[in-house]
Image 1 (cartoon, rainbow, N blue to C red):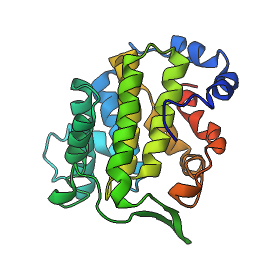
Image 2: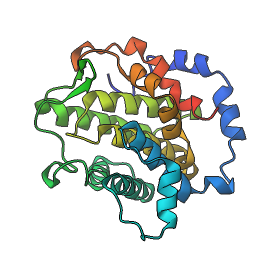
Image 3: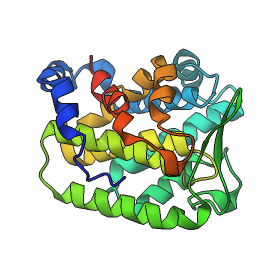
Image 4: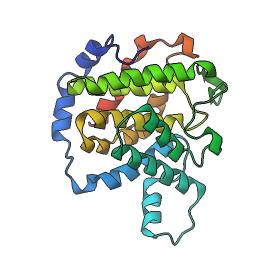
Length: 253
């Protein structure tokens, strides 16, 4: 699946109708509770929670208020590293080189140094309580698929896109990326970062304030179910992708 494929766009657009434009128009980007620093911290907390981190937003913000008087736990440091990766992305253009740098920043507590900011060189699967849920593409093809992905991202960044198209492609970037699963660990966190990075590159920095990670956390069962389009990379059925693509616009409801 190439992300610049508009095969599912009409179905996506018909499903959201005028709703997305209305939601964006009524979303108060200037609200003092939606300053980019706080929203970045919240995004990192919710994204980490999806991956099993137990520190909730209230606990994290109270830790920040302690001004370092409390010794940070490993889970706190995971969130702090993810915040730094978001901040890096907010100041840099979306390229494959910068994307790898972002992974290197966020993965400090997740993998050993030789795996940070580098694509995997071995098999990776996604496991659930009942066993293997999904087997990603073989390691020898990861670089090729990531080159394709960023070639498409580069073309889309240079193209004039309507807002609905930006959300469509951002969601598709997220979905295709997680199916490649190019890193040893940190794939989910960096996928959600990548999605928002693409939107902000196209629509402006205010879109870093989108509560997408919060929405995915609150609908975590649907999030994982909608990502699951097949048992392995070669049996993915993107004809079933619309429920996932609609989750990002729904975060503005």
